[in-house]
Image 1 (cartoon, one colour):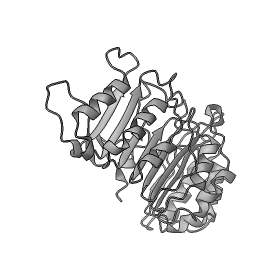
Image 2 (cartoon, rainbow, N blue to C red):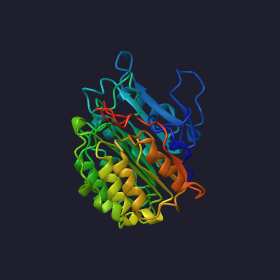
Image 3 (cartoon, one colour):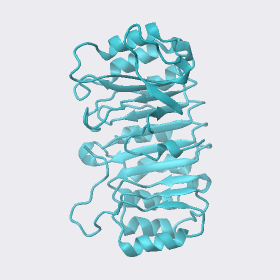
Image 4 (tube, rainbow, N blue to C red):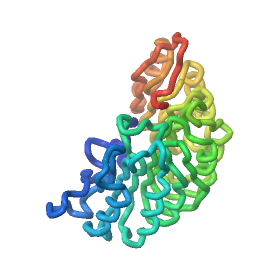
Length: 318
């Protein structure tokens, strides 16, 4: 799998495309529609839109688009997403699963900060999406408030991403307790306790063992206020030996966490090691650069924040 489209971590989407398809919305009545199976369909309403609800837009979608061919759906705003949860759209999707047999990629909550800050997005229990779509290969969710995820077994999921300013520990544990034999790409934005990110390294143990994730090739445990502790755990994690890329970016990574990565198991088998947005000192950045020079590892140590500053922060919080 080509993971290059995930390089834009904050947006999650890539240059107007999703799952390799151009992103399009519904056209006005009478206008020609894009080809159903060659489009990533974006359904979204703005908080200030009075003409249509997301439920109404979804009804129009299933009435006007050949839904049996749809491969990818992006759910943006559902109106007042900071007051209403995603429960209704989850229900609409699951109740119409039979009309979407080709759906393989789904992004729930793809809103820009101008529309709704990431930690204001009210999610819901998203587990029914995996239960209703057993052939789904990619599920991405933005927003951690009210987010629920239960342990599940899913045979075909390849990509699972949770973007949050604070990811609930219960969600992290549920991911760890899930059986996902086909999962290749896992990305968790752990966030901060201020926004509900209360996961600890202990909650990550089953993920780091890799026992339920035999196909995993990319692991992102990032955007964390406890990034040093996470890095220390990752440095000794059995799953790392079979990864192709490792992401410890966007968090409060200092020299302590970097030292753990350097002194832990070898990482030179990786194709990519992402540590961007960090609080490491210049000497440590130089050590890392030297350690991976000539190894073939693409190392990202960009976005160096002030290691001596009083305030250390994750890249995405509110």
